[in-house]
Length: 372
Image (cartoon, rainbow, N blue to C red; front, side, top):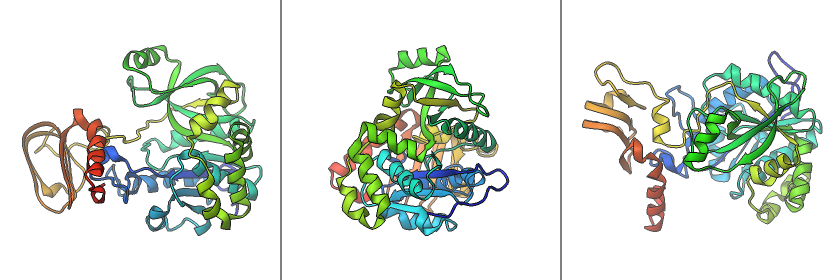
């Protein structure tokens, strides 16, 4: 791990940022692949990948106390995109084990170096435009975490989404420097449409974006209560990192929400900071289309992510991603999604964007995993 930096302007003393960089973003195929997943792509036209943008948001509050956890096959790409990341702060998982082992390993290593550290885990593939508001919520979350609670940041729902989990707010918490803090009454799995509408109307629920802030030692101690074997294995690796390849396969897969957050919430040990910033997990092309600016007046309703000169469009709305170097022509189409890559072409509608994942599954069953 990197040595703890002195507190600079804007930095939060003792806060370590953990960036889990995993998954393959199958609903963004053929742009996002298992070899080059969505966090390595610039999906907003900013010139920075989602991973780099996550780093940019966290570096002002964490300084050099940043750790990225990714798969072995993506480690070189992460190094290339984050040249300022110290080598010891890049953790490469030998195999996928879901979010709890990834975040827990970083926490265990940080705990050994800085026993009083607070860790904040923020996924590498989210889009947040209001960086100042995000950092303000992080500061509140750290203040609550120092009371030995597990803290999450809840996103205000803008529509009755069925693809997200929800957080039910409880009573306000009297924590200095955290005026927005509430206790979490419960975590709720992805609801049906009618239930999601009721949640949004009530004002009592927030989307669960998987952002967690907690003392490293508290996280490991909670895990030791609910999954002793996993906690013990992570702490063994932290004590002797050379045993990673030996011990990692013995760890069971676990998601942090179910492994720790849900049971801890049932015991009143979880708090939430309601977010004041915009947020998008770029889950599919319909979501991506909301993040890209429309073209000039010559193509109203059309959005292009890539080289605009490669797209010739007439009476078309939707989004086009020209990534093969050849010209893409669209004519008389509404709400279309066109993704043109050197070895695969996707043409669908925004309404069917969620179904792209099924195409990836079909390709795998056909023995064409080289395309996924």
